[in-house]
Image 1 (cartoon, one colour):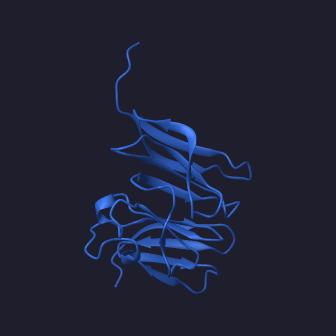
Image 2 (cartoon, one colour):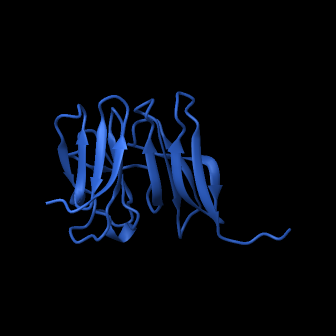
Length: 169
């Protein structure tokens, strides 16, 4: 059985998602739940739990350790139904630290990243996670850690980052 529940994410309307240590439960009506196995987006022996975000249109999954992802070097996956998963375009080699689909518009989403090979920053989607493009906020001296849409209908996004180098005053 399930030994622990990591996160419960209430979503708009009757949508709910529950991340557990061995999979993800989602419900579109709060009565029936679908089970999503982590191994759909990770290596069979992966030791980590992917991070999921769902909207009324799609579901995305972020695998923070690129070596444990189903496709090495691809840390972000997209699915319309939770069964068939595809690599999300535009996120290759990015270490996705946090991802969120908009609770207001199911097609909008953001993720934050850092990368050993490229600059990290904030990326956005307008097709529910199929493809992602970098925003103007890209830095090679910051590790972006978290991102959230603000409550309400403004569509504002809040992101946090850690600066890698010190500054002199």
